[in-house]
Amino acid sequence: MIVYRNSKSGFVNDVRSNLIASIIEKDFVAHNISHNNDAEYRSWANSLQYLRNAIDVPQIDDECQVAIEYQIPLTSKRVDFLISGVDENDHNNVVIIELKQWETSGKTSRPDIVTAYTGGANRAVVHPSYQAYSYAKTIECFNENVQNCDISLHPCAFLHNYKESSRSNIDCELYREAVALAPVFLERDTAKLTEFILKFVRSRSKLDLLYKIEDGRLRPAKSLQDALGSMLKGNKEFYLIDEQKVAFETIRRLVRNSLEQASKPDSAQSKYTVIIEGGPGTGKSVVAIQLLCDLIRNNYTANYVTKNAAPRNVYFEKLRGDAYSDNYIRSLFRGSGSYVSAGKDAFDCLIVDEAHRLQMKSGIFQNLGECQAREIIHSSRVSVFFIDEDQIVTTSDVGSVELIRKCAKEEGSTVLCGDELNLVSQFRCNGSDGYLAFLDNLLGIRKTANTQVDIDYDIQVFDSPGKMRDALREKNRVANKSRMIAGYCYDWVSKKDRNLYDIILPGGFKAQWNFSDTATWAIDDDSFDQVGCIHTSQGLEFDYVGIIIGKDLIFKDGEVQTDYLARAKTDTSLKGIKSSRNYALADRIIRNTYRTILSRGQKGCFIYCEDEALGRYIKRQLGSEDSTLCQLQKVGGR
Image (cartoon, rainbow, N blue to C red):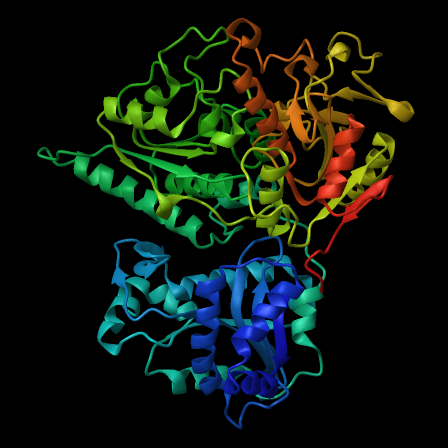
């Protein structure tokens, strides 16, 4: 989606008349998109004046096309500025320009990471050249037209306020690779930026290149489980963006520093614990797996750790027969209870995904060890915890930032956490931050300003579970990446008798829970008609999900309420609630469960509610009173 588009001459006129910022502001409103009003408005008014100077030359045809604030598909990231056209050889090109208002910046010891005053504080951020390059590569990965129409993307960064006296902080050997991939232009480099653009854009293309990029067909979304084998071989399947890259490089540097410090007899500190917070779809698992692959390729001892068996089983199945022994694969991907007896600093790095699912004790009967978080910290020089406390979904889940901090202190491990390491950008739910805010508001997890979805995302609310399944089946025919998931409100009777159905709903709908004789329901060829639950879907993602909301979540007395008594007798996630009478915890777990499964879909989410009043309420929240189907797509408009 492009917020503002115009010809070069139209853009130049909008800037000259000092209208550009207000026009973009109106375009945001027209697209129903919220933004950081004051800061972004000032940046448009300021930066685009300098950019006009760079492109307002006669060698660039007035009809070349310009775009501002292009949202990269399936992400919440926006490209500042694009200009498209053809070069002297009539080849189609688009120049991507990342704009910064910085006057200076600082170097770090981490590749592609600088420090700069942004967001009201001096913090570590990605180098603008790497940022522009990663955006370009992400567009290439998602957009079929870029390849099919032979469109070349050329990224660069323009820091129009950046002082020449600080050039060595942004354009130096440490950042040579990033600058080679995407040149950086400073305050005195406007003429050089013009020369760079002129290499690729002189006349308007016969094709509407910006339309091709904006409305081009998206390639099938790349899933982590499908890319894992290639990543282990050293191939780049995902380009880490912004705060993902900061977290990755920070941890990688810490592992190296920790080993260097440990080798010095007088070293006072060589043990670190990193806490990275991030909601659904912010790329926690992508960063974790990419970190694992990088560390083992560089001969560090590292494990990917998660309480959830579902992703471990899927990863194992995907890697089997791919030049790796079964024992080697299992040694890389381990459960959170694997470190009860591990020695101190036995591993260089343990990477814990879904750290909110950690338990106090290990073993089948939870009677081994003392605390999984402490055991992990004890047995690794660098321990990394990816956590979202709003995804705690059972009474035995004890993972929290507070607990990890406490355990790190007991083990003498220095804790690193905070805004610089938190993941906030959305890479699921079609990149819609608004959808996650909508879920939080709908489920009463937290009040948000966004009660409406503000970006393209396929949400459909059905009155018939059968029709929802039929619609989802059509999506699944594309790549076998769509699944039904339900709240745990139905007894698992088919576990003992395959002739019985677990889920029986109005209209003749019948289904069984995912079979117990497979650990890879999420990717099995014949598992579509089986229904998954929180335990078989958390930590994984799909193209589309069809969610059956049971009677543990209802709409009553003007609000969304929970009823823990509606949970199945075979569900153990609320074990101990009756005896403890901790009804607030039960309420939290139910809401977290639906937040988690409702955010599993990259492209869309279909919903059926057993409670008709809840279904009607969700439709009203989505702006529809249709009695049979509410379909909300392309709210942003195109």
